[in-house]
Length: 351
Ligand SMILES: NC(=O)c1ccc[n+]([C@@H]2O[C@H](COP(=O)([O-])OP(=O)(O)OC[C@H]3O[C@@H](n4cnc5c(N)ncnc54)[C@H](O)[C@@H]3O)[C@@H](O)[C@H]2O)c1
Image (spheres, helix red, strand yellow):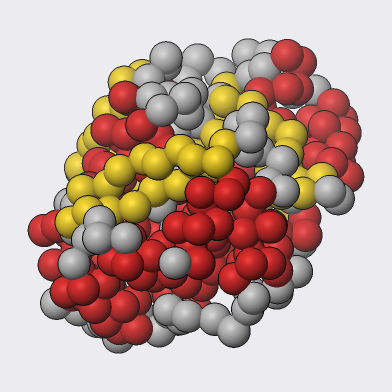
């Protein structure tokens, strides 16, 4: 089995293997001190994978209870969080027990936040089942729920006890969800690793599953390095936001009717076009990025008023003081953090 250790404020292992879901009981009995586990999952993942996980856990002597909520971003809110707290109370979960997040980034984020806050904090384990959650959200300890006034506005840093990552679960993802995760994968190639980007250039959405284990492993390794260098997002971790400053604005512009991966794909292409116009990178790099984005059925441009996008970037509640931070790549695999005034950002984008 492949293992990656993340040396953050708390060290933990990521176990990566096909069919590792059926071994989660074995893995967790060697890591956890408790025998009581509360699985949190959504209805789709519940029907696909919960039985395998529950069987493996009970076969290894764990007492398991399970809370299932409706799938989708709309469930990542305070009201579902409240239902999770009630469920944990009713099942007498104590501070020495452990939560299991079984599902995509929505399940991971809300379960992680419940673990950070219920009884002032208890352990949790991530079992991510989407490409995005395997390569991104399950690693690094960011947890959150959405408020009606914005996404991820209430959250905490809370590292998991371990991550159990089964790339075989990605077989049941729709092409759209696979594409969505590929936007983040392409981002990793752009910001840190040209060889990884070349792997994507050599494939398309129709055959990337042939080497998905390699993709998952290499992307997680990059995320691990970045998180270890800047766990609490004060500096280098910002490079993970390549394509996201404009991407978040694009999501808001379309009232979240566009997927995150699609918005990030356009965000990466738009900012790279601006970087090219500003002489930061060459046209060949821009063209390679656009071709790669297209090969994964992702959009690279949009019909929106760019000024309106800049306004949305400058209204971002998570922005620091009066500056905007954004990421550009000078070469594939080399990213630079830029911090400018809103006016300078506007001129950079509108050049
Ligand atoms: N914490 C972080 O660092 C971080 C980073 C990036 C994104 N996020 C968050 O992650 C969330 C998005 O994650 P996501 O894209 O995984 O969304 P998601 O959790 O909503 O999953 C997408 C859909 O896929 C279904 N699904 C999950 N696994 C499946 C499988 N194996 N087969 C078939 N269907 C499956 C789910 O039921 C859901 O309908 C957002 O809320 C975002 O804010 C967090």
